[in-house]
Image (cartoon, one colour):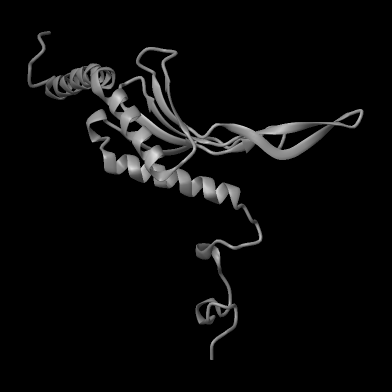
Length: 186
């Protein structure tokens, strides 16, 4: 039984789309290698220096085409100490967080935030995904916004207070009638 081109029109469209996606993967990987990785390092270094943030820009190249550029805020002592006997104490180490531009298997770039954590004090939170971009979409205004998001998330983590209600989570009687000091207006 012969196959008519009209019978496989949809299949042909899907095959064309598939080939386009494969070609894009190769193009995205080439863009990363030839320009984007270097531009990220350059722009992020300039941002860190301009705002006075104590961070290092690292390139991670363990696996080709799964590389990353990381704004790493480093490791410090947490101020917490664990008694280990004999009057000795061991400092608990704090990872200060990072902003990661990770190349995905398909050449697109995953941007995520690793929040701080202190060893032996709970579990690290999973990374917060900001977005996935095609290489040509990552422009300097996005990098600035990502850095702002990072610093905002770090500030929230450092200033954790479970007693302060989130402003959008307040519910109850007279909420809309309070004068901002918790006192009903009227």
